[in-house]
Image 1: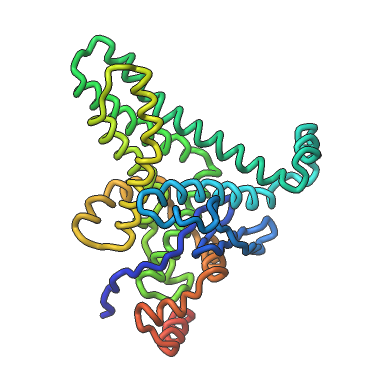
Image 2: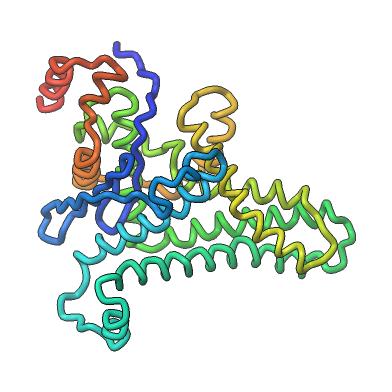
Length: 329
């Protein structure tokens, strides 16, 4: 009987997009999309980030902020690329499109991506920071216990976040994205547990992974609850200002915890990871084999998994070939 292999950190990560997967390894990334005709289109490029190798990206806690910004920008870019395959060819450029192209020329896409990313951050701050604060103020207007007020705000913030995840999962398109999300996780789990990257092996792998954006966002929510509980001031305006100023701190702490969880496997890590893995049962769904094929194409475009298995698991070429033959039988 084959023994379960201990997971090894690969360094690759990804994101589900419209009918596809984006996978990133260091500065190289690939977006694989299943086109309407059934073919898989793979686009390979490099993304060095907003700071482009700045030393700040390597400083603990600070690097979490920059990595979060990079993930938003690259994620939006990958989504726009995947969506381009499903745009109506008869759609004509609007007056707004023409004005943007006239002003920004070949930089129009970058400007729009940056603007949409900025609006997304503002929306997230409004929903998950301001809304819980004002709801709490309305609910507890006659409450004089600061501890109780802080607890109520924390509970409301968590409820809003989970409710948001549940509501968007109702959409048919989002459900397909969640299935591709599951395919992304399954591919990474497959190779990080020493198995050759075949459709059969990937389908048998877990769709839950500790280094997931869902887990990161939940950590952000939970850590914000803790910090806001202990940091208290009397002025309502100052309370809001402090919440805004603490966002980079919260992102930095969350990133370090997620990074630690992705490289370790002790009891502390299991406790930290448990809420995020539980929430991933909502944000990931079981993919079909065609989705897994797309995910494999994205992985192989940026990552040599055969060398990884040889280095980390001492899996020799003949063992891989034997496994592949068994899969095909």
